[in-house]
Length: 203
Image (cartoon, rainbow, N blue to C red):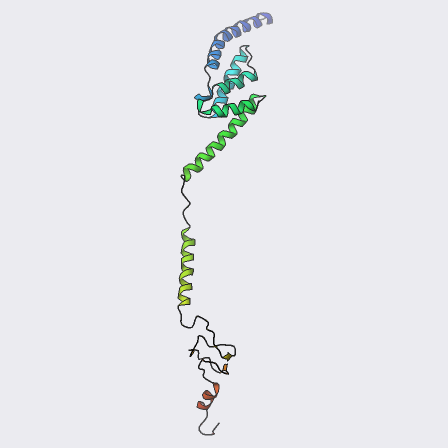
């Protein structure tokens, strides 16, 4: 076709034919669209915009209020309270509602994952390595306390750096450091010096 007007008329007839075929289908899909029929919010939102785009292409306008009411009225009956709460928030755009629904869906998925990882009423298992270390420390402490002379007694003697342990006769043999009226037995250096003297020179 050389005449632009003839070309325009041919395209218009073809477009009107497509619109006549596509509009009833888009209207049917819009009428039967339900939020509860989709597993995720993103899936429902994608189908809704596809239908709305088709209807607008065919010359039928879909308002934001109609999109909001379509979403609210097609929620599952178990979400009745949630649907009323969303209505009371009085969203002005459909985008705001979808953002809230996507956020709520993400939080619910996180709660479900946490619940599946650890059932209700169960506590986390203790760390085996930490438990073994604590038991080893307790065992070493008991062995140390059971060794002889590990407890300090209240001796009456005035010892030097090392004091006799326990009441009565102590078992300490610290050489040369127990003086006065101590109850522990000690071995002095003098006795050792005498035994080590040279027999030839007498020193």
